[in-house]
Image (cartoon, rainbow, N blue to C red):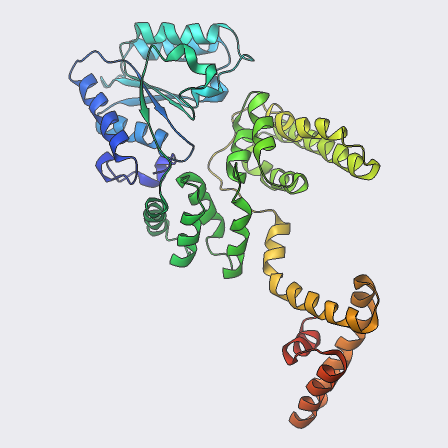
Length: 411
């Protein structure tokens, strides 16, 4: 399952893939509420991308509830919570439907928010006439310990690769994605049980050249890059973005490139975008200073600017509709991977023969040899071409495919 419910508008809760027991418990909770039973709110806990929000939306749809959803950016203070939730918790829609109060990512509630936020939430729980569902990554997070006596926990577990594969197949069929089964299998096996991120991977690779599949290996890390970007772009706290960037195995310069590439896809307000880029430019400045001066204390400023600085630069909730994209540099490296490999092999062979550094070989000797190979292969007869291959092999140890690469691809 995935939290992106728009992809599954035509399915029911008994058709979802993975975490069937959790979905069944949630459906029982919803049925009990509709039958007039008094039930505690439920907490859907578990890793990102396991279907918590999707399950809540499907349960609401199947039981005739209207969803009133808040996420981490809305948990600012008691006043904002009361304004958005008190009326919804006490009333029904004009069509007589119950309101489902869905508090998503409740573990983003931290000490940086108004101290009255937790009391506002418990007050709403105590007085609500409508169902309430929370979602959280970690039920045992100390920040939401005040909720444990008020909720029943329903645990969502990481999805096994076969379940992720089936989900991706459904999404690919629904969206007519141009992705091979081999690519889907590769994404599923390295998804870490996170269906949402797996779908993001597949969307990025939709219609891309086959060699671009190599790039998804860059996401095999403790906190994958899309989850890191989500924390940076969607958080309104200081701690969550900086923790996500610290726990990511992406190299710092590459993370800056990811943020730079995807900022316009999320921050749609001009002022938000300008302020975020200002923070990112400062992070780049400190990164450069640290590298040049070998003074890595600057990194502490860089880390704050590129994560929490970007996150707190916004006043408007980011756009969720556009998929993330790989930085152009990654796409270019993937596209030219084979060519760069051949060039590197030639360079190493030449270094053994002429004993100069790779930069000089690339700018000098390889260019001369490329011109020779191009002229000799273009103008010669078949026999002369064979002699050309023999010459390059005897003198420099270059295979025929390497000579062809010099003539056709070296620039």
